[in-house]
Amino acid sequence: MRLAVGERPAPELTVEFVEASTYAEVLRLMDGYEIDLLLLDGEAAPAGGIGIARQVRDEFDAPPPVVLAIARAADKWLAAYAEVDATVRLPLDPFETGQTVAALLRGEVGDLPAGVAPTAG
Image (cartoon, rainbow, N blue to C red; front, side, top):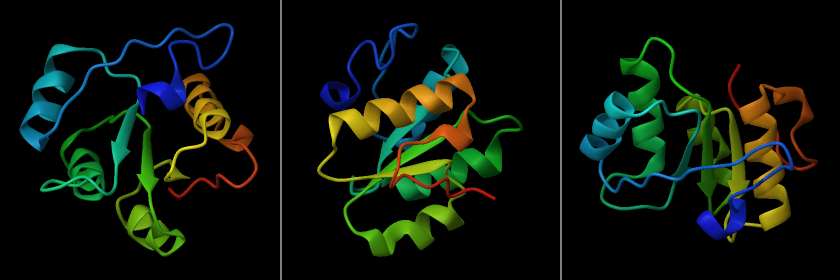
């Protein structure tokens, strides 16, 4: 995911990554850092990105935008249930992923790359 986004997904944006492998780690990082965006792996186990995305939406008053990496187009309905802001397909396309992250960091949900539809209503 780091390689697909890069440190500069847009000329005016610099990204600092923090990593978590469990929901408890996500909570710890969200309490200790100002998280501007979550990029979650929908295929991760045991706590997948879909479940973590939904829990973050349910437990935080103002959660950051969430991008969910999914392997199957059929998983978009699960992403919609989790109220993620956008999905990207695995394997990640660096151009599409970088553009998606940049658009959400700028608050430009309507400017997501072609093929990346917002999933949250």
